[in-house]
Length: 432
Ligand SMILES: CC(=O)N[C@H]1[C@@H](OP(=O)(O)OP(=O)(O)OC[C@H]2O[C@@H](n3ccc(=O)[nH]c3=O)[C@H](O)[C@@H]2O)O[C@H](CO)[C@@H](O)[C@@H]1O
Ligand SMILES: C=C(OP(=O)(O)O)C(=O)O
Image (cartoon, rainbow, N blue to C red; front, side, top):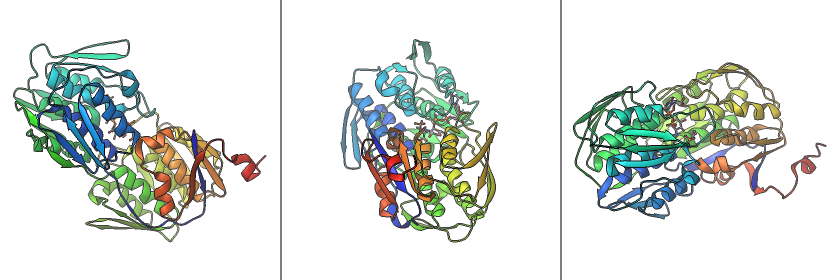
């Protein structure tokens, strides 16, 4: 078991390169199940992430050939036999459920345990099932497992989502590519990861229009074939480093960042007095002056991303005055607040809104990552805290950040990753 030790106070300066998007690659790997001809090669893949390893293992257990080398993944799904996803893998992450649509489309049967993922709310999959049922699938749910059948064949239809769910849009979109006739998804999610998936499927031979808007139309085709494809950069990883630069009053360039995916964050950072420069090859963030407090509400894209809610709270803690942060996407995504409070943060929760009193110094202490983004946010808080912050439960961070410690260190942070047993935090800081 390991922990991250952050010694606060250093400004971040320099340049780093963004990796490929975790939330894009996971459904794209699932979508590769649809390629009954030729091999799929995906480039710019963050292969070192735990979640990428989980989804590739999942495909391998289905009998699909998957090879990973550097930042490329090749998938050969022309022939495979199994349609049962194992609990050990599915329980590790939410995105495993995106194999459901492709398996039903390709094999007319799938057995997938209810998915895991970050503990940030109840996270049902009713919208996934509703959409797939409208296309002609039937489901039995029991003992924590979803078993899906297609008695006849998938047929195009109109699907209205009660919530613009990212995962449900992906599952329905993938299944509809091989359905007979035309499917429309109304109130579809508009996230850049949906657009990336649709571009990928279209290059494979699918006929999808409207991805990136709430109305997606899919005309079914007989088969899809493997292609070479390069995925979009990770807007949440990029946003995390943009915030890290600003809280330390640093000056950082993030190469490969696509600013059009991060408009909500960029506008809010500018309102706080932070300089954000957008260019074709990246985003430059610098901050020198006092930061102004700000009110934020998380929303589906193009609204402010819930995945940047906990890092954003650190930026609000670094501002002078009272900010608010309202979480509207997940009902239970404030677990990190208790950990921030251990560091001396003054945050009050009223329903779905956090009231953040910024401008007071944070103090380093031992904290635990409660989910993926909360883990990264605690590391950020450590960058501006007095003394040493010790972050545990790194398995969450490893799901979604490649070498967070190395990246921050290269920008000048005083940070290390070490065994839990090595030098005790309490002895080191003489807090007892
Ligand atoms: C692997 C991946 O890409 N994960 C992202 C994806 O998760 P995920 O695809 O799970 O998120 P959804 O967009 O589906 O969830 C949004 C909301 O809809 C609810 N809901 C969802 C499906 C459903 O059938 N019924 C239902 O009620 C959820 O409980 C949640 O409150 O989008 C989220 C919202 O941007 C991000 O935080 C996650 O990082
Ligand atoms: C919530 C996240 O991931 P997941 O949906 O896999 O839990 C995330 O990436 O912040």
